[in-house]
Image (cartoon, rainbow over all chains, first blue to last red; front, side):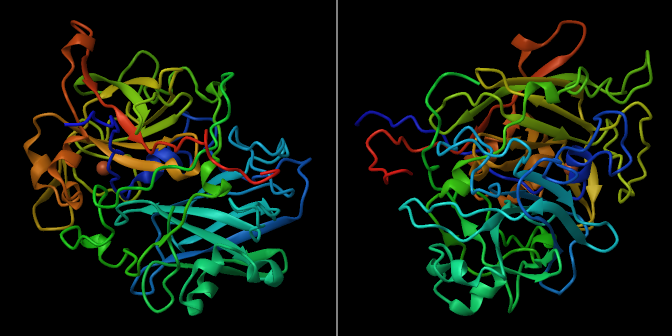
Length: 205
Length: 246
Ligand SMILES: [Fe+2]
């Protein structure tokens, strides 16, 4: 036998379950006094952050067309200059007034989620080509066995979207619009369809 | 955090045969919430290689003590006192420092403090049910809590969840993001649970079962359970060709 590679296996995922709020947004659930605030709540930007303030909102919709009222969404994005606020970002220092990360539970009555953020800049693909501005979404909920990764792209970035190397990888072009958020005023609407004719493109990244 | 060169490698692909598939009919809620089309495989870009950092200053004094963080002064949560500890590692076996670990659980009677919860077991006025901790330089973490009770749930007419603690873990890259559950050694309900059963392989399920750890038990006070968590590892970038200015 050759030597072992000594690699471990990733821990298996399990559903976040119906009570994910207790752990991730306890104040929202009326469990006060443990954490000052719910981590990742509120706008992603501070007062001094550069960039255009926008709202991103929508619903997560199941195979029957019903919005999920118990989902948790996290987003991760670059700042207005296209830099990530992360130690793994080696191209420069991101805007210190912009975190790049937030989390939001969908509304218990309506299923709506809302993020207040800035429009991200462009980030290069590994081969150096610019990607179109985008926001990474990570979605967990009861009934979702392993977190779903997808991306929001911006409907008013047609030229950038047309040359985006990730969107170009989508073989069935009719599915590209599932990743495009539509602008109305300062708000981009992005609904995620877990199943059905309009099933959102999810990534194995 | 430290003076090592930044971690810029892409993560190893997820082993989707080890992880639970999306569509698992015995867990009924998954039926309408599972994508049916193939996932689009994508080598990591900066958007997945990078991730947010949480500082130790986030953590309050009682954040890792679920016995006391919701209790009235001088009181404590009811139940079997336990310590849960372990390390967050990557697939190379290296400790993941600065990882944020958030946990939530039912009380000793199997009841959650939540608006949508309807189980008849009583709430414990001194138990909130959440805690959090950030791993040290070796990736180690620990918290104190009470052992959660099993509880019935609407799936089959007589389905019970084994005692479990929910874990949410942030590593260093957003592609490592993971939510899972910890089970307790010896619990017969583990092998009857449709949610546990979403994981295809027995050895993968066993990766989520924490053994009793008498060596870390505090005599006359609290038993210990050890629970290591493995996040995805990164490729080395040492001999990789890199684009100019990238
Ligand atoms: Fe649970």
